[in-house]
Amino acid sequence: MTFIKTTAIAYDDKFVVYPKDDKELIQKFQKIKDSASAEDHKKILKEGIHFSRADGVIYICQAGSQEVVRVCQAFLKDAEEKFTTSNKSESSTKKLLKQLMMYHNDPSNDNILKNQAKVDETKEQMIDNLDKVMINHEKTAVLNEQADDLAHDTKQIFHRNTKKLTWYKRVVIAVQDLIHKPEARNK
Image (tube, rainbow, N blue to C red; front, side, top):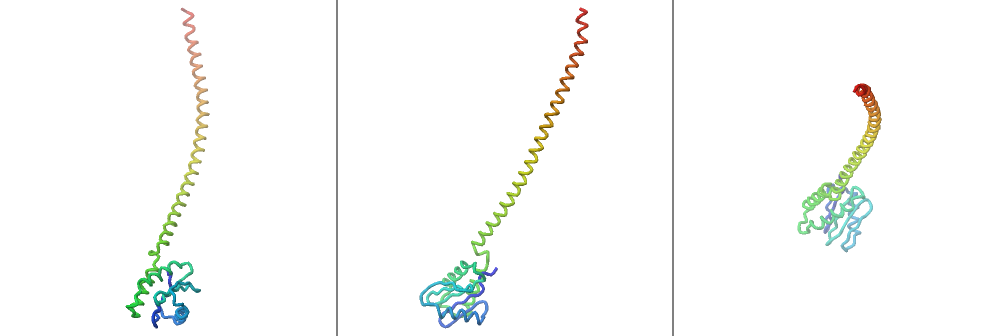
Protein backbone atom coordinates (compact mmCIF):
# COMPACT_ATOMS: atom_id res chain seq x y z
CA MET A 1 0.00 0.00 0.00
CA THR A 2 1.46 3.33 -1.04
CA PHE A 3 0.33 6.40 0.83
CA ILE A 4 2.99 8.78 -0.44
CA LYS A 5 4.01 8.66 -4.10
CA THR A 6 6.63 11.39 -4.41
CA THR A 7 8.57 13.60 -2.01
CA ALA A 8 10.82 16.63 -2.33
CA ILE A 9 12.84 19.06 -0.27
CA ALA A 10 13.70 22.49 -1.62
CA TYR A 11 16.40 24.56 0.04
CA ASP A 12 18.65 27.33 -1.18
CA ASP A 13 18.69 26.80 -4.95
CA LYS A 14 18.51 23.02 -4.72
CA PHE A 15 15.48 20.88 -5.38
CA VAL A 16 15.77 17.20 -4.37
CA VAL A 17 12.98 14.84 -5.51
CA TYR A 18 12.51 11.20 -4.56
CA PRO A 19 11.89 8.52 -5.94
CA LYS A 20 12.14 9.84 -9.51
CA ASP A 21 12.99 13.10 -11.19
CA ASP A 22 9.76 13.63 -13.16
CA LYS A 23 10.07 16.97 -15.01
CA GLU A 24 6.34 17.71 -14.88
CA LEU A 25 6.24 16.99 -11.17
CA ILE A 26 9.37 19.04 -10.56
CA GLN A 27 7.69 21.96 -12.37
CA LYS A 28 4.64 21.63 -10.08
CA PHE A 29 6.91 21.49 -7.05
CA GLN A 30 8.89 24.49 -8.37
CA LYS A 31 5.64 26.50 -8.64
CA ILE A 32 4.86 25.59 -5.03
CA LYS A 33 8.34 26.69 -3.98
CA ASP A 34 8.04 29.99 -5.85
CA SER A 35 4.51 30.77 -4.65
CA ALA A 36 5.00 29.79 -1.02
CA SER A 37 5.17 32.77 1.29
CA ALA A 38 8.11 33.39 3.55
CA GLU A 39 6.06 32.55 6.63
CA ASP A 40 6.21 29.08 8.12
CA HIS A 41 3.01 27.22 7.24
CA LYS A 42 1.44 24.01 6.02
CA LYS A 43 -0.91 23.67 3.12
CA ILE A 44 -2.73 21.03 1.09
CA LEU A 45 -3.11 21.64 -2.62
CA LYS A 46 -5.06 19.93 -5.37
CA GLU A 47 -3.79 16.60 -6.72
CA GLY A 48 -2.89 15.40 -3.23
CA ILE A 49 0.17 17.62 -2.92
CA HIS A 50 1.03 18.61 0.66
CA PHE A 51 3.77 20.96 1.69
CA SER A 52 5.14 22.81 4.64
CA ARG A 53 7.71 25.53 4.96
CA ALA A 54 10.01 25.92 7.93
CA ASP A 55 13.23 27.89 8.31
CA GLY A 56 13.48 28.61 4.58
CA VAL A 57 13.16 24.94 3.59
CA ILE A 58 10.09 23.63 1.76
CA TYR A 59 9.03 20.02 2.34
CA ILE A 60 6.68 18.54 -0.26
CA CYS A 61 4.94 15.21 -0.68
CA GLN A 62 2.35 13.93 -3.12
CA ALA A 63 -0.18 11.48 -1.74
CA GLY A 64 -1.42 8.40 -3.53
CA SER A 65 -5.00 9.20 -2.46
CA GLN A 66 -6.92 11.91 -0.64
CA GLU A 67 -7.60 9.75 2.46
CA VAL A 68 -4.04 9.92 3.75
CA VAL A 69 -3.79 13.53 4.90
CA ARG A 70 -2.61 12.47 8.36
CA VAL A 71 0.14 10.29 6.85
CA CYS A 72 1.34 13.17 4.67
CA GLN A 73 1.27 15.59 7.59
CA ALA A 74 3.25 13.11 9.71
CA PHE A 75 5.74 12.73 6.86
CA LEU A 76 6.18 16.50 6.58
CA LYS A 77 6.63 16.82 10.35
CA ASP A 78 9.26 14.05 10.40
CA ALA A 79 11.05 15.60 7.42
CA GLU A 80 11.17 18.97 9.21
CA GLU A 81 12.56 17.34 12.36
CA LYS A 82 15.15 15.12 10.66
CA PHE A 83 16.39 17.31 7.82
CA THR A 84 19.38 19.40 8.73
CA THR A 85 20.59 22.18 6.51
CA SER A 86 24.13 21.51 7.68
CA ASN A 87 24.22 18.30 5.63
CA LYS A 88 23.00 19.60 2.29
CA SER A 89 24.28 16.94 -0.08
CA GLU A 90 21.76 15.67 -2.58
CA SER A 91 22.55 12.03 -1.84
CA SER A 92 21.99 12.39 1.91
CA THR A 93 18.74 14.29 1.26
CA LYS A 94 17.53 11.54 -1.11
CA LYS A 95 18.53 8.93 1.46
CA LEU A 96 16.50 10.75 4.13
CA LEU A 97 13.49 11.07 1.79
CA LYS A 98 13.74 7.37 0.94
CA GLN A 99 13.85 6.35 4.62
CA LEU A 100 10.94 8.60 5.54
CA MET A 101 8.91 7.47 2.55
CA MET A 102 9.51 3.80 3.35
CA TYR A 103 8.57 4.36 6.98
CA HIS A 104 5.38 6.29 6.25
CA ASN A 105 4.27 3.96 3.42
CA ASP A 106 4.53 0.93 5.72
CA PRO A 107 1.02 0.17 7.05
CA SER A 108 2.48 -1.54 10.13
CA ASN A 109 3.82 1.85 11.29
CA ASP A 110 0.37 3.44 11.12
CA ASN A 111 -1.33 3.05 14.51
CA ILE A 112 -4.72 4.00 13.13
CA LEU A 113 -4.52 1.27 10.49
CA LYS A 114 -3.30 -1.21 13.10
CA ASN A 115 -6.18 -0.35 15.39
CA GLN A 116 -8.64 -0.45 12.49
CA ALA A 117 -7.41 -3.94 11.65
CA LYS A 118 -7.88 -4.97 15.29
CA VAL A 119 -11.39 -3.48 15.30
CA ASP A 120 -12.22 -5.32 12.07
CA GLU A 121 -10.87 -8.57 13.51
CA THR A 122 -12.89 -8.10 16.70
CA LYS A 123 -15.96 -7.24 14.65
CA GLU A 124 -15.57 -10.44 12.59
CA GLN A 125 -15.14 -12.47 15.79
CA MET A 126 -18.27 -10.88 17.28
CA ILE A 127 -20.24 -11.68 14.12
CA ASP A 128 -19.03 -15.28 14.28
CA ASN A 129 -20.02 -15.46 17.95
CA LEU A 130 -23.47 -14.03 17.18
CA ASP A 131 -23.90 -16.61 14.42
CA LYS A 132 -22.99 -19.35 16.90
CA VAL A 133 -25.45 -17.94 19.45
CA MET A 134 -28.21 -17.93 16.83
CA ILE A 135 -27.43 -21.54 15.87
CA ASN A 136 -27.41 -22.54 19.54
CA HIS A 137 -30.72 -20.73 20.05
CA GLU A 138 -32.26 -22.65 17.16
CA LYS A 139 -30.90 -25.94 18.54
CA THR A 140 -32.27 -25.07 21.99
CA ALA A 141 -35.69 -24.33 20.50
CA VAL A 142 -35.68 -27.72 18.74
CA LEU A 143 -34.59 -29.46 21.97
CA ASN A 144 -37.33 -27.68 23.94
CA GLU A 145 -39.91 -28.78 21.40
CA GLN A 146 -38.64 -32.36 21.55
CA ALA A 147 -38.68 -32.24 25.37
CA ASP A 148 -42.29 -31.00 25.32
CA ASP A 149 -43.24 -33.81 22.93
CA LEU A 150 -41.50 -36.37 25.16
CA ALA A 151 -43.22 -34.99 28.25
CA HIS A 152 -46.60 -35.20 26.53
CA ASP A 153 -45.91 -38.75 25.30
CA THR A 154 -44.68 -39.78 28.75
CA LYS A 155 -47.81 -38.38 30.37
CA GLN A 156 -50.04 -40.32 27.97
CA ILE A 157 -48.07 -43.53 28.48
CA PHE A 158 -48.14 -43.03 32.26
CA HIS A 159 -51.94 -42.58 32.26
CA ARG A 160 -52.42 -45.60 29.99
CA ASN A 161 -50.12 -47.76 32.13
CA THR A 162 -51.74 -46.46 35.33
CA LYS A 163 -55.17 -47.47 34.04
CA LYS A 164 -53.86 -50.93 33.07
CA LEU A 165 -52.13 -51.35 36.43
CA THR A 166 -55.22 -50.23 38.32
CA TRP A 167 -57.38 -52.62 36.32
CA TYR A 168 -54.88 -55.45 36.92
CA LYS A 169 -54.80 -54.76 40.69
CA ARG A 170 -58.62 -54.77 40.82
CA VAL A 171 -58.71 -58.08 38.98
CA VAL A 172 -56.13 -59.55 41.37
CA ILE A 173 -58.09 -58.29 44.39
CA ALA A 174 -61.32 -59.64 42.96
CA VAL A 175 -59.74 -63.03 42.30
CA GLN A 176 -58.26 -63.10 45.80
CA ASP A 177 -61.64 -62.18 47.27
CA LEU A 178 -63.25 -65.01 45.38
CA ILE A 179 -60.61 -67.44 46.50
CA HIS A 180 -60.58 -66.36 50.15
CA LYS A 181 -64.31 -65.79 50.66
CA PRO A 182 -65.31 -69.41 50.38
CA GLU A 183 -62.77 -70.30 53.05
CA ALA A 184 -64.19 -67.63 55.32
CA ARG A 185 -67.68 -69.10 54.90
CA ASN A 186 -66.56 -72.54 55.82
CA LYS A 187 -65.25 -71.47 59.12
